[in-house]
Image 1: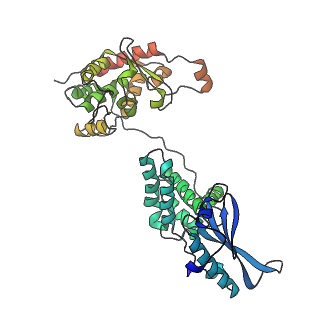
Image 2: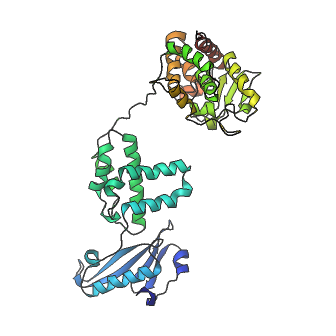
Image 3: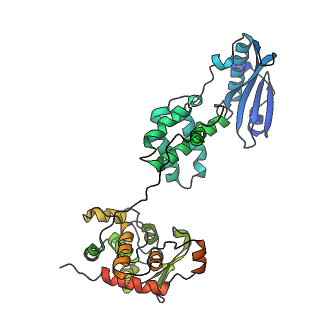
Length: 394
């Protein structure tokens, strides 16, 4: 039926016209938003029905986005709407516009935004959140029927137990519904915004994340056990134990970051959580570990399975599991060091915090305390190295 329908627009015009409302004839318009989003609308006069002022009832209806609904399909649907209107039937209650489901629009948004994700993993996480918590409940619903109760159905069960996930889910549902509106499949306020403004979900205090840590008394025996192993992961874990930096900061270490004459390792800001360069005073025990891996002549200090590529993020955690270390994480070694620094070394707070590459104090305090206390930290790290490596296994 669609093939004989004609109008002023062409496929090329539909793709290239600038912002504005462009008529095809017979009440069909292509609306191009300033953002570049393109959608179809049809204006009809419903026979026998009056508007509030008593005049003929003219109404606009969205027919869908131009990236999904073709020019021929739009003309076909517009014709169907005009026929209904001529019969005195209000298209809003009698129309058969093919409205996509929530899941269909979500998948479309995921594909469209793929080039903008920071990495593939981030893009996968985006759709996985919706797949796990939204699709089972609202995935098959037409996108224009998703209102506040349906969004609440997705958010309420995990709002307090998995609050960070729930917040991300809310943001992703909101994005999908906003895109659906821009394509002409929805009208009115976004229900996620309405829920937020109404304050119907309880306020949740963020729980501090605690990484399970071993007691500092257990570290020397653990370190000695590592020393009996040849695996690269064991050497990386020993180095992590001594430097108390984060996993990624150690595994990303490159030889060009080290000045062995000055006995310092400078981790560049782009690899630090703080975004600032961090100097690590190298102790004799740290240099001993470096000496064992230097003959590999790799770009990275701790080379993984592939030449000139670092160990994987999971390598040290898997080693812990193989060693039978329960209830402790690699990151937890930082907490272990912090406890030792307070209880045994009894150093000032800022010396211990700077050793962990934490920012100390507020902006004003940091402006006055520009020193990274390298000399005082060198003494502390020497003491820590001596403590960690003092016990040998029988």
